[in-house]
Image (cartoon, rainbow over all chains, first blue to last red; front, side, top):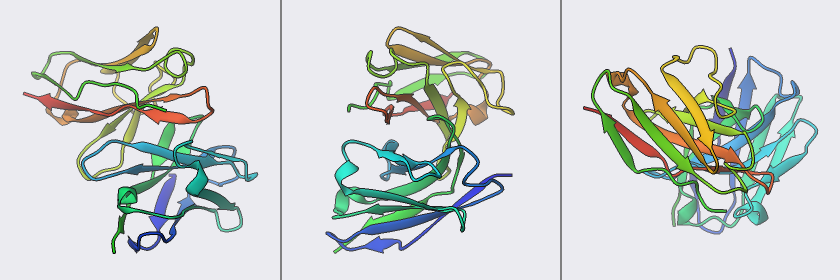
Amino acid sequence: QVQLQESGPGLVKPSQTLSLTCTVSGDSISSGYFWSWIRQPAGKGLEFIGRIYFTGNSNSNPSLKSRVTLSIDTSKNQFSLKLSSVTAADTAVYFCARDDWYAFDYWGQGALVTVYS
Amino acid sequence: QSALTQPASVSGSPGQSITVSCTGTSNDVGGYNYVSWYQQHPGRAPKLIIYDVTKRPSGVSNRFSGSKSGDTASLTISGLQAEDGADYYCSSYTSTNTLVFGGGTRLTVL
């Protein structure tokens, strides 16, 4: 059974960098799927952040692209998100998901990240 | 890129059918057959219920069905059950090689 688990600091200061890691179990991160990040502010809808392939090939939401860095560690079966220059608008639950050609079939439980000063 | 347009809410009685619409443009919904639908209960991660416009993942009830006409995709739930009450989101691949979600629709089972 495929499982994903987000981890990282739950509090980040404005202008700093948000960092999250997603650990995958039950599937190899090199299995041929993309691996994605999606976020959801409290009471609001879903927003696609970006996706990465095991080769390192990635693409991101144009509205966030300048601040997003995606990476992947096949030896640890993990992929990571860095979002720079955060503001209160980046406060959200961040989900990682397995991406089968833009259909997210397995999701992590989500990690709440709050930007506070 | 703008979010796909969904009605904020829909409602129906048990046993009835409801349809949720998802309107985009020729650069997303209308241009590709990569529309997905997700069900999300409060405090939970979304669950994939439809992908590639009409396909159901293994284990998803056949009461859920998807379709598309032009720039608008639709999710139909037949034989409404109490547990279908949730938020529903559509998503689509876009011409900029990324993905856009709809704003979400809250389904209330009366």
